[in-house]
View 1 (cartoon, rainbow, N blue to C red):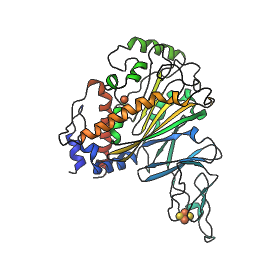
View 2 (cartoon, protein in one colour):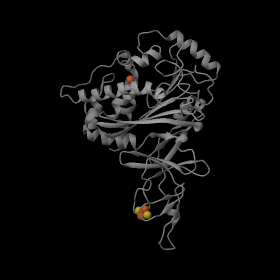
View 3 (tube, rainbow, N blue to C red):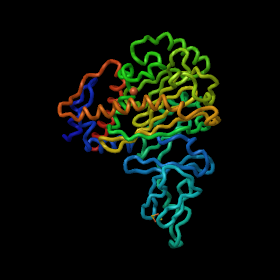
View 4 (cartoon, rainbow, N blue to C red):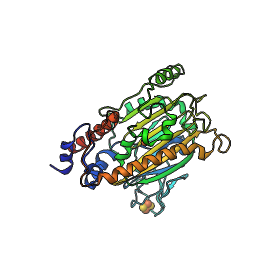
Length: 397
Ligand code: FES
Ligand SMILES: [Fe+2]
């Protein structure tokens, strides 16, 4: 039995995971194979590449993917590896190219990946066999997901669950107001776990709790939830929480702000124009997750999104994006500092918690501890994760 199998056997449901899940490079490499190179990963938003030829690249460990919009508006993803001798083609994180020209010997590819020209090669070169290797793409209402798997897992449930929550934002017409990036000294799962419970919110997230009713787990918010739900339903908005249980990788919910609060801001007042179809500010908070790397919180006037990308067992990058309505004008309809301060403060509180968590887990005396009832979703996250790892081990036996 290898290390991972032993660890999987030792797991006690409702308790935190063994140390090696957060520290072992051997376990990390198996996660890369069984999860990160298999599952659907959030890469970015369609509004980040609005014009034909706009592209972004997403690097997941050692794999780089080009995501580019074609002339007909379709979004393609390709492995960023030239079919001649393998050079990376797009070297920037984002940019615009009418064609994809390899920097080494100048082979040229169309945006859809087909090889257009290969200079000074024999006339009988079969270009049709030398297109860029495709990467699977799935769109959910303007959110771009990719899978590096040969045969990706079924994604229809996730698309069906998240679409009604994203649709009103009309993300194709949204725009990026701000981006930020943090490199954390924390295993990627600790970041995921942190964002699956509010047990820590009361003592730590003073600003968050001042805007979100019940986030401290002390106040009763049932009446506000019930009342808000009726209003949202009347507007045709998605309200049913889609729990993450078993093998599902997604979670979706809509929850209310504190009465009188209109946005995720320090004073609860709006920070920008209502987005997309929203006409007012009373649509609560849309919380969406897709494991392993997509977390999104949207209020009526902006979206805050977190993309997690592991570096190794001990480190991960979080890429944060703030989206606003495409019509919103900076300096007129929104101010960057005001738009971003709420999540800058709240996020940085969380980054510290995650890094502290990692530090403590490295102690020789660390051992799994019991979870609180309010950490049920962390347990669900563990279930999803452990099932993926178990299946991976079984397949490779
Ligand atoms: S490696 Fe790309 S053209 Fe040679
Ligand atoms: Fe938090």
